[in-house]
Length: 373
Image 1 (cartoon, rainbow, N blue to C red):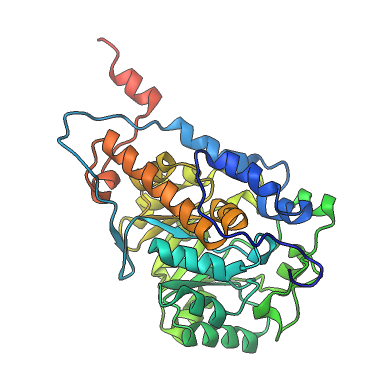
Image 2 (image 1 turned 30 degrees about the vertical axis):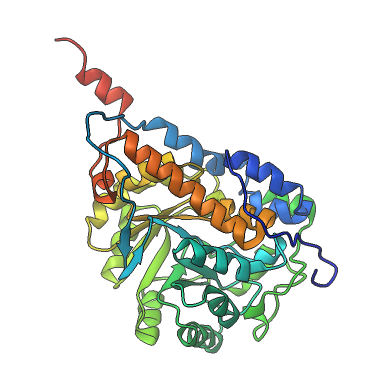
């Protein structure tokens, strides 16, 4: 409990069968307004629904006689070895889900052996979250403000905390039309620790918070961040191939294909629909990270087969946090890993490089190719 806001404090492992069920269970322990913020998308939520639905349009072709057992899920990104190609996406204000907040997610992600990306709008300081991660790799997701001095302060905190990359979120220069927040009159009931020296997040809506952030983000801002920190800079929010090329030309060390979980521009494509064209444009020059809509190991497999190097999960891990603290977060990662291994086995792919070389089934093109002359 912090102030008048009550969040769950239970710490336990979760038995996960279906992440849709996990969302329903989380809604029972998270307040209506907070759950609306966490779960909700923009506008009619068409793009948010499309994020998951569009995976169904590219089936995985099962392969047999592959002499395969126990596929290898290990991979590497930006010099970091991972046990599987799944990392934690940045999510604001995690104290809405559990009393341990970002510290719980940091521990659960570290116990899973992977990377946590920490939001500027976290409820804990970068130092506190780094300590909770106990040396595990962490990245800092950066929303630049209009105050250059405050930007330097935040980047200094990330450097002092040992964060290994900066993720510049470029698709949130204005808040999306998040109708659940408007209906619930939702404002953040808890402090956002990193904003305390600049203003405050408590008692404000996400739209008000975004209004204080920088709206005019271009290649020059990315270049300034890279020059100041000397850290790899990943540009998050890429959906157009041209934007990926612009980021790489400015020195980006990676691009993240994302539509912010369907929370920004409703009516845009599902993130998975945008991935192949971006990956072709990048052509292996920098890593491609993918997020938005992942709810199954099959989705991870399809993203990797379509050009992603790793994927990032957001809402599922927060539901795990809400229901089981750090152990719940770890359970979510283990669920995804188990499903990915199963899919790799049935698709005849021994390792992640083999997954990346897999051609997904195209129902229309493959049906035409199989027609008799």
